[in-house]
Image (cartoon, rainbow, N blue to C red; front, side, top):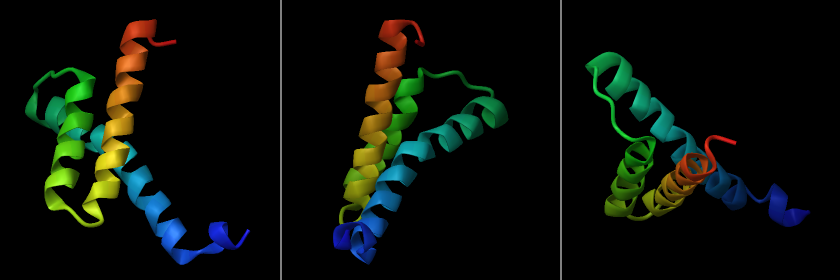
Length: 81
């Protein structure tokens, strides 16, 4: 239980979760505001690459972006189910 209550653990989970959700914000900005249409995987890859380049805590954001890419690929292969 002490691991779950650890501040470092909570920050790590928040960074990874933010990296997972950030591609949705990027997609909104690109598709709705700029009128472009890219594959959903591209947005997760952008966040993953940006986090990896940033380094440090950005590496955890990159993990979240990578998970988003995998989820979007899974949805594409399974037909969204």
